[in-house]
Length: 269
Image (cartoon, rainbow, N blue to C red; front, side, top):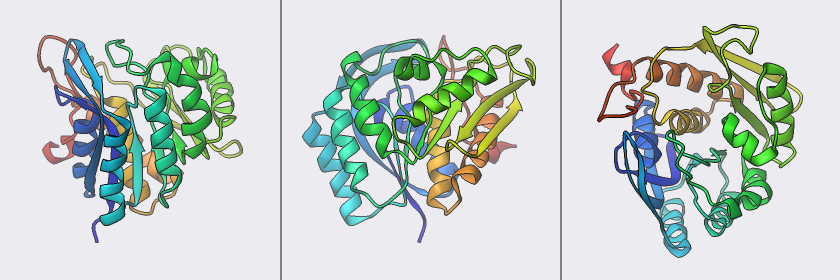
């Protein structure tokens, strides 16, 4: 049977991030993608013009409808918006026998807030403990832990701080790290995956392309696809890093602002 992956996230009407990016990533990885919508956004290449979260009962009903009948091999979470949604989703994934990839979305690519400040404590105490892999970027690390990352050594401190909240693995995404802050220099984007004992440094070329909308959603979904296909966490993250690097390199202009990564780049290479 084709592996099944469920995304629990918000909708991006522009198609660059959120559920739309997740489902495109899943298709590119040969898995069957399913979705639980948590919020609807009015969003384009210039930013988020509006956001409306769905009621908790609607989110719970979507989740149970999919999991109880179809089943899942992995779950990925994205935009959850409120403390009530965070806690409901944390309870749902905790009760599901499948790995969970938690992307603790705080702000959009354009800097628009997508998570209420009042929900941060619920992310720390409810959602992260339910995660197999947590995938915060540097802004989200600062928001959740107070650790400001400006070097690779700081990434170790950030990972330790995230692991304190209970996920099995932390993937600290260093895409926003200044290019000259790491040993690899400006030409590489560096991520750190660790479970507190083993460390995996993932390095890839840093592409000079401003069209990177949906990068975080895409990476987390690709990790979930790898886990659903039976890969270990390090194997899934390594494959996801390769995929998202290619998607960033192929990112394209769309609208007047920041365009999306290209989820189908492998089919056009």
